Figure 1 (cartoon, helix red, strand yellow):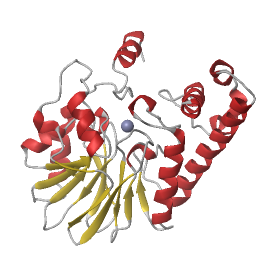
Figure 2 (figure 1 turned 60 degrees about the horizontal axis):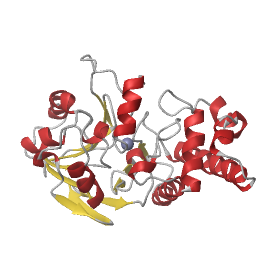
Figure 3 (figure 1 turned 90 degrees about the horizontal axis):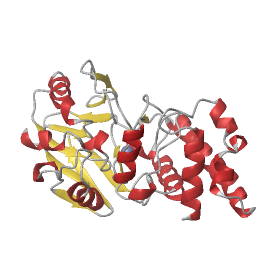
Figure 4 (figure 1 turned 180 degrees about the vertical axis):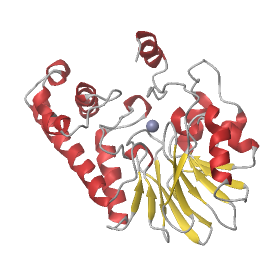
Length: 293
Ligand SMILES: [Zn+2]
């Protein structure tokens, strides 16, 4: 991230600051997970797609500039219209195409706080989202969507990655979309400025793990298709780091002392969890801040 981008992030505290090169050669790949559910990968948060005679239901949509590519990838899976779109949370790498999707007929579903944040938070260029980018169906806890022969259970988890996260479980296909409550194999972004917290994160993963089994196909917010075993390892990582950092807080250590203490995260640093956006120092700081909060 450049200094300018960092400054922008500070200015627009609640905007997702995962940065992506704006290359035009992004290809959208799709993987079939069940008779009617697919995972689409391009640039930004992973997309879930349900197809069938009721129409297409999409979960998340990456960036506005990718909408034409995403729609053409979906057209290869189904000739039905896109009827519903769910946002797992408000970050721009998951909701950037909202307005474009509304314009092709999708009705957007999200947690109350997603609509609130999309309506109130300026975009990186300072603009405010147009009405078409906002969810028209919102809820505060959970809801179900009955589509393409199955119930999709959509449930909110409190103060995890943000304050508006939902997870979506396809009950017949046995597919879970975790939103950004799961970064596969990477330290997660805990967006404290948008209501995220380490304890909420841990609770969210625990709740998801109760629902799923060894056969469940898990679509993480970021990273490759996953499963219950790997999601459980991710939980173990969060719990270990939380324990390690709480112990330092109990000893009276400052954020700066925790920030430079690589031993606290070494086991997981060595497993490759540190990455350019959330490196090991950043995750130590985030967990420290969250526990002190
Ligand atoms: Zn996010």
